[in-house]
View (cartoon, chains in turn purple, red):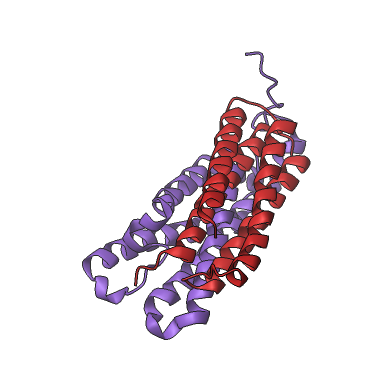
Length: 154
Length: 122
């Protein structure tokens, strides 16, 4: 391969290992964009017409907070506490998208307006459905590094 | 919004996005080409800001929520700046991919903005 490959962050020196490396960064960016989108949307919904669909809009706001929390937790996930927060946030996200996706199809009258998670995230090209699986996969594959780190710290 | 300008923005943003994602996955670091194409997306967005201010005065008002429209537009304008800043700080292949993801999300946001401006599904 002759393409100028960056010194791969995955295998590089400890300097690089202190930050989020490799594809994890792309994951963080996708989470950040979702956080931005969900925050913007729920802000508009709540400011303009909260009374119209209080349940849906509250859930929009909740999902926005979960995306913000998950973004931060992934960035700092090398720390034990943040790593746990990342698990909680992403599992909540997964449960949320599955539960709300199902309810929005079975009982559409509860959701006169869409949330990020309605129809399993169909309004966001199903990214909300795929993202938690990628997030959990990333956390799972990076568990050993955290464990090793805390092990050596003790 | 102006339809042909929206289409121009979509074409440029999708092209810039695919280019950066492909080059990034091929192992390229951020280059003049990828950073430049993201800057072109940003220039078009700034032009879109001007259009969004002038169009209602020129008899082309939005049919949907103006607040929602501006939330999208302001977020979209900020994204390339963040993407390029990241690319300059972190010169690795993943920064190129990130710029691509940014450009593709802008394409989605521009499309949403066009819908808010013109089509109302009430």
